[in-house]
Image (cartoon, rainbow, N blue to C red; front, side):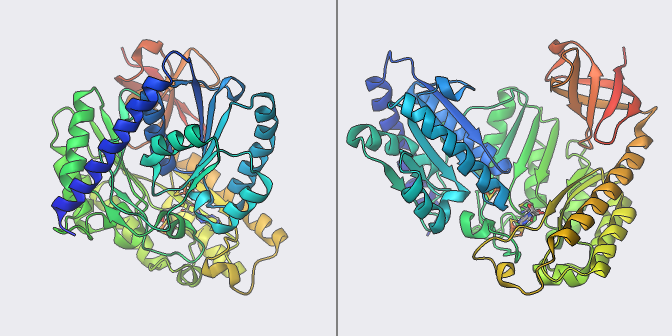
Length: 470
Ligand code: SAH
Ligand code: SF4
Ligand code: F3S
């Protein structure tokens, strides 16, 4: 399909939904309706929820954080681990009682979990009070699904097996005025053997370079200072466009946008992180010196079984290259403990990488069997007690290495973009350095959204403590 057709088809669809939004807003006028969105999972879902909120607000709903005051409740779900799904079923049990008290309440479910047949069957059988169900490929259709629900008063289920066109120009809300996430691609082609994402998010597809740059320019005009580019594997951005473009090219183009102070990106698959990208990180000041580089395991044996397509050695070499080109770069990572067949030696390899890389932060997950993935039927599933012990060892080591790494900041003056009032102390603001380290500083709320020089006076494992430099 030509580039022009893709744009036309999706614009047409966006216009059709805009028309429905208009009709709904007329018919619901004056009803003082409220919505409550709960988002589970990763940044992809968080970004999708902003689009969902944007559509609901245009229809005329106002936001509430309280489910018992809402007329429309939607859960944007995740299924990357079993826990994520159990959480949703638990919350649905409670929602049933809320709906009994308020029969006019509309309950909607969407997101990754809905893309699984087994989930749909369970919902139909045990949770038939849910009004609207849709998946990851047709978020933009929410207005139409709501219209159908209101007209027919019957449950509406609309799940697609695969994506169609990328629909640009959806209404939108933003959590922060000064920073925003921008999708650069959807889906994933990597099929890591433990991972369900390619099955629920479909094949990789990139947005056109010009669409992305236009979105960033509009955000910057609107006061945004920091952009986070999102994709399951940003390093393979643009490969499947009719005119292929590299991620490094996108970053260098975006870095020229006047007024854009910081560019971040997530997630980088180690197998695709190019020398060209390292050069771009090194060259442009507004491309941040931090990279989330999930390793999953430090053992080449486990990495091969995971289908990650790099080795312990090639990963460590990549880390050295990044550090040589960008000396102050910080790295964060993800680990999976207890992948099928993981031996004590494999575990020790992971601990060895932690000592060598000195991550600024790590997310450590216990392997969760996902039906339909190759790893689910692999032999040698690791016994629970062994997994727990390895998990605790890895957690303790990552914590102590991270703390060690943080100590170097004490005494330094860094630039911090203040983001929000700290959850634990309302006289303290939290912000981040260029290297994505969290910093807590006693400062007035008026500084939120501003860059300030901060002198670091102390450190905890996960954040620095600083003072404003006058
Ligand atoms: N695209 C990203 C990761 C997306 S999922 C990447 O390739 O790095 C986020 C994290 O969830 C993964 O990095 C992995 O550590 C974890 N994860 C994914 N599937 C999992 C599973 N079945 N069990 C436990 N953790 C899992
Ligand atoms: Fe999952 Fe691997 Fe794709 Fe990341 S790269 S989303 S871990 S399949
Ligand atoms: Fe979860 Fe879907 Fe993200 S499964 S981690 S919300 S892509």
